[in-house]
Image 1 (cartoon, rainbow, N blue to C red):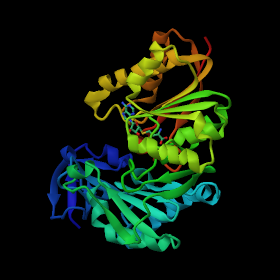
Image 2 (image 1 turned 90 degrees about the vertical axis):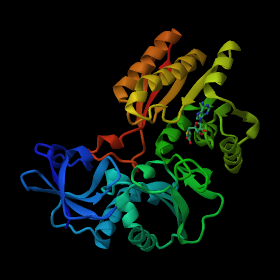
Image 3 (image 1 turned 90 degrees about the horizontal axis):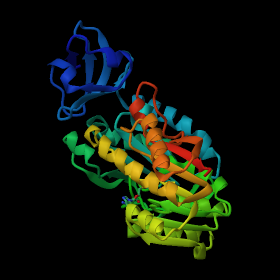
Image 4 (image 1 turned 30 degrees about the vertical axis):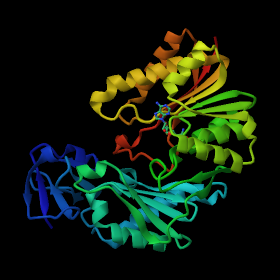
Length: 397
Ligand code: SAH
């Protein structure tokens, strides 16, 4: 098998089972591998370290499939990995009140660059790296077999990270029937419609499932402001939980239209709901000027920190919206605030939220620390897999 030999003293991260091999760590290649093919990784002294997928165009030159020398990368390998991943999600899918979840979560499920989300009887995949792309046909056929009720597998690899791998963004039906325009799903008993063709990610923010349920149990009789509402994930939860009214704010009219449909399909009273197509920063400032008050605010913004050089600017963004939100909460009010920036350390996020409260002149306490749902696990050797941080803060004065 073609082999990449590392520079001296560059084997540490692989010994720690981190799955990425950066181009700068590689001294030379022994043999020729094509894009996505399997290569062995060896230390400078010849010690075998891992078997990985070759990404000749990426800075992440190889992504590890296995740290077990005896494991061959073939159809059986992918079947074992997917079966293990499915077992982890079994309790969620067998609960009966949830029909959508992440089935394969890339590196953290030992399958770098592969995302598989299940929405009712449809699977939606993202092939983000060369290795998955190389094995796509095998993986798709195996998924169809492992999910006998599956009606179709759709690809949403329309993501720019593929360009770093020398792959073009691509979408389309991979197997079976084309999914309907809207797929109905259940999430802890809440009903949502998902647009897997044009929705964000593979269509829905599955990672917020548990946090939406937390909002549901806290929303009774509260005036809720749902910032960055997307298709109303938190709005439906708050209304089911008995919110007095819910104001959704998002700059996507399409997302707001689907939010309205989602409220209706749960039989909830639309008269209690507002849909505002506006920039959240502008809207929060306008509320402040008008002295509007809320009892529960959700801040679930898009990733503000996209690269390390973005950290300062992103931190300012988080601080601004959190300060404005604190100003709009009455005593006893709750703030559910999130960062989905993997590059934002949780301690720093907490510090930003604390500073925001201070600037707003409010005292508040953290009631809960929130994370992504358990179908988005973080392999201990791959801390980068942990990206969603949330705090529930209660304002006292
Ligand atoms: N809370 C949602 C997910 C939010 S995703 C859920 O539970 O499903 C982030 C959303 O923020 C997207 O819908 C995007 O359209 C919206 N958005 C991004 N920048 C914005 C801005 N400046 N003002 C308002 N909405 C914004």
